[in-house]
Amino acid sequence: MTLAAMLLLVAIGFCAGGFGALAGVGGGIIVTPLLAIYFGLPMHQAIGVTLLCVIATSTATSSMYVERHVTDVRLGMTLELATTVGALIAALVAHHINRRTLAVLFACFLLYSAGSMIKKAWGSRNEKREEVIPDYTPQNYPIGLGASLIAGGFSGLLGIGGGPIKVPVMLLFMKVPLRVAAATSNFMIGVTAATSAYVYWGRGDVRVDIAAPLVAGVFAGSLLGARISPKIRSFYILMLLVGIAGWLAIEMIYKLLTGGFQ
Amino acid sequence: MSRQDVAADRVLSLTLKFGAYTAFALIVVGLVLQLAAPWGIKVTAAGLVVLLATPVLRIIVACLQFLRERDFKYALVSFGVLAIVVLAYVLGIQS
Image (cartoon, rainbow over all chains, first blue to last red; front, side, top):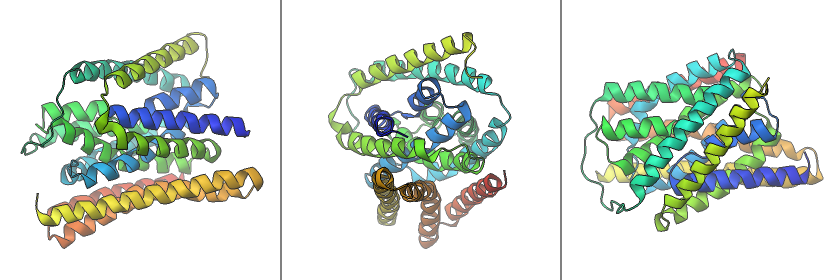
């Protein structure tokens, strides 16, 4: 690989990790399509590499949230029982799904994520940051576990974290405060992504030469992003990510219609 | 939140930080070495292996913390998660 390509991958990782940590969303959704569209990587390889980026974001940022006692470790561990099962099954199945089908699923998820980010940005306009976390007891474990199974499945299938599925369910059905839900979802993502990453790694779908510079960038970006995120309003970053996600979805659909992703 | 939980969070956070910074350092050193020598990619790959191992280490540390707090229910939950992840690793090697 040329030095220029390596630096470009570091830069992409830095932006994905940084924006992800600043806006409280996984940067994974922009890495997979970039690799598949502009680097010509087969979907399975693009997903395998993205899983490593997702583990990097989760590890770097959740170390800080756990330190600040925002993460509910017990809740996270319990739901991981379901996310890992979903991730394992999906990673085994993903191998048998053709690239075009994966690309269609991914484009749909990009649009869904863009929608949920718009909703999040709209909600964050005038929000006051909840400084003190209110007392709570997680409710409705069966619904939480069911949603976690599905989120884990999407993670193994598409290489994403699954935050847009888990966070609303924890908030609405399990009655967990938003900040705790976001931090706990983020905490779970590392273990979930690692579960499917082992399967991808074993199949040779994790390209070390591409993953390494990306992961280095993601680490730097997410560590910096998580450090300055309490001082920055997420509205504009979210809207920027909505723009990027929307653009990538259009590119993917265009490429699908013109016979790409074979 | 109990004092034990506060201490447990600290250990867990340190575990994650240790994994993250070790992986980051190995990958950066490996990438720079790669420019000069082809074997640098082995250092890079070692960094990715550390990255992949960190979540498992995190589960083991959490499990031990729960055992120390005599919270056997969550120790068992952690052990269950560990079992599934190890199964994924075994199936991954075989495929």
